Image (cartoon, rainbow, N blue to C red):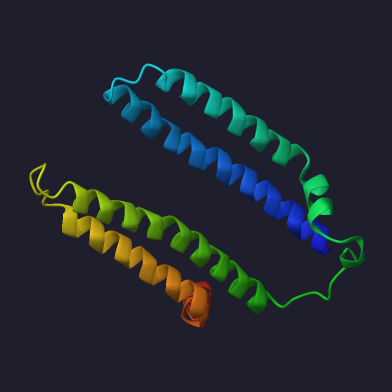
Length: 164
């Protein structure tokens, strides 16, 4: 595959992620706005959905145009094929970066909510559970980023488990 094709696939994956993540977060935004009595919550939610949907559709249907803008014309010749082990390492690293990028802000947000609501609401018994959950996610993401050899061995073991 050429770098242009690889980047085009990445742009399409980003458009799918953008649509899913926005769809997940728009409900939280809408309902939190309605809970505060904000009447503009519906208008803001609808305009956000339309804007993100337009961006997602544009990225889905025109990934090569975006890739051409990001890659210099001299970098578009085919690369030497990579080994499956290097693809696995790159995939594990990307999954680890995604997991880290999604769990660290959630942990910080949860810590800030706990800090600022410390005397206002009853102490929730699930504080420790959420902290443990996010810390485990961060640990797994760091393991995927910096040392995916254990995962590679686990995948090979699972693939060859029935063979003798």
